Image (cartoon, rainbow, N blue to C red):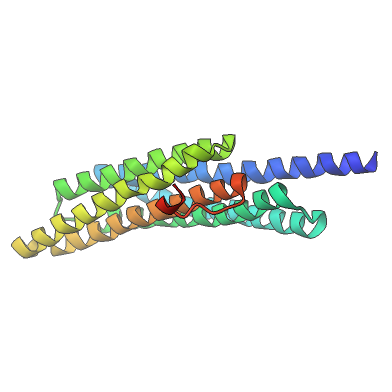
Length: 224
């Protein structure tokens, strides 16, 4: 009886851990979407709200770490259960970094006071939209433990990388042709870099979803 009660409690803890990670991911989606909106609409108030809201995600990560450490210490999980806990901690760290990059986008949006550059901003929006779709899909993959979707998300980071290198080319050309665009172009370079790094962290999450299911990390095309 006591053993059954312990198993049930552990299952509930695993569910709580997963729900905390999903909560972080959903908040990251909202933060990134708002950050891009603040850039496009030049909404400094919204940008500041994003910066201030970063503490909420940090707090959830702390809850994930605390719960995971307690489960590892008291439950001594093995196999699939152990992978769930380890991956949850790693994914929470990635989501925390994604939120940091969303806040950085907001900070640069506030400082982008002049030199409105329409084409580069469109490239950044394209990158962010891709990242948002990747986030949504990796959330589904994690909820449903869908290994094929996790791998598909992993490969989609190539789209963000391609858009980022295109952005670099555009901005370098602009800075050479028009010296007055240097300050604004530099800000947009930083924002583009944030989007590129967000893509990298989403691929980390995809690798960890793959790890939960298969027991192996997905390291790209070499694995099929």
